[in-house]
Amino acid sequence: MSEFMENSQFRCGYIAIVGRPNVGKSTLMNALIGAKVSITSRKAQTTRHRITGIQTKDQTQFVYVDTPGFQTRHSNALNRTLNRTVTNTLTAADVILMIIEAGTFGPADQQVLDLLPKKVPCILVINKSDRVKDKAILMPFAQKVMSAFPFAAVVPVSATLRFQLESLEGEIRKYLPENEPIFAEDDITDRSEKFLATEIVREKLFRFVGDELPYTSTVVMEKFEQEGNLRRVFVAILVDRDGHKSMVIGNKGVRLKEISSQSRQDMEKLFGGPVYLEIWVKVKSGWADNEAGLRAYGYE
Image (cartoon, rainbow, N blue to C red; front, side, top):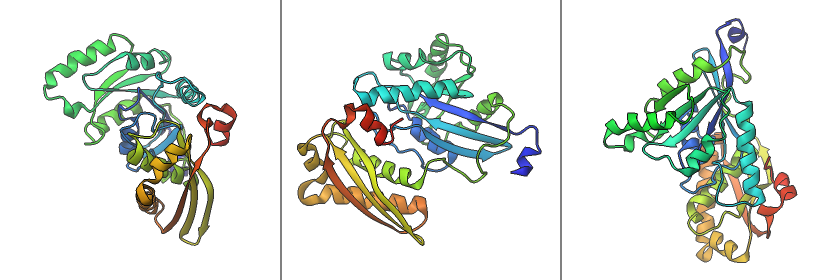
C-alpha cells in the first residue's frame, strides 16, 4: 500500500450504480472490475443487496456499489428496504452512474432520476448502445435526457461487449477525490465467501424458476465450513407457499439438481477450489413482508 500512499495523485472513492430494474447495472459492474461479484438475470429485483466491486489500476481505486433497481410496482417490506438501500447509497457516493437503456427513458427511469442529489457528480451511462441500429438517434436521445438533469458527462456503453468502458473509467476518475486506497490492491469485493455463495444460488433460482416463482423467495446460509481447499456449503431456499416449493424442486427433483449443479460449478470457479453443496427448500410464509425477519436474513 505504501507505494500508493506516496503518490499524492492517487484517487479513490465510491461510485454508486443506479437505475431502474433490468438496465444492466450488475453486468456493468462485473465488466468494470473484471470479475463476477454481482449476480445477474433478466428478472427484475435480482440484486437485493448493496454489492461492492473493487478495481485498482492506473493510480486509482474504483469502489463500485451496485444497488437494487428502484422498485415501484410492489410496496411490501422487502421493496421498501430495497429502495432505502438505493437512497442511502446515493447520499454516501463520490460519483453516481445513472444507467439507462439506449433509446428508452420511461416513468421508472424518471423516478430514479428524481432521486439523484445535485451536489454529487452524476454521469449518464447509456447501456446497450450496441443494440441501436441507427446510431444517429443516440445523440438527440442523450441530449433530451440530459436536459432534465445537470449530468457531469454522458457515455454510451455496452457492458456485455465492454464497449467504451475505458472512456467511462476516465470520466469517473475526473470526479474521484485524491485519497489513499481503502482496500488492498487485489481485492475485488468486500463481501464474504458465505454471502457470495448464497447470491450464486439465488441467481440460479431466478434463472431456472424466474418466470414461475413470485418475488417471495430468497436464499439463506445454514452452514459454511472450510476444510483445507474444500468448502462445505449448506443453504436453504425460502419460499412463501407449498406450491412454490414444488416449482423449485421440479419433477423428480430435476430442477433443484440443476440449480445445485450450476451453483456448485460457479462457486468452484469463484473460490478456486472444490465445493460440496447441499440445498434444501423450506416454506416460510410472509417472510418478505416482515421487516425484523428481513434484517435477520441480511437485508439492510
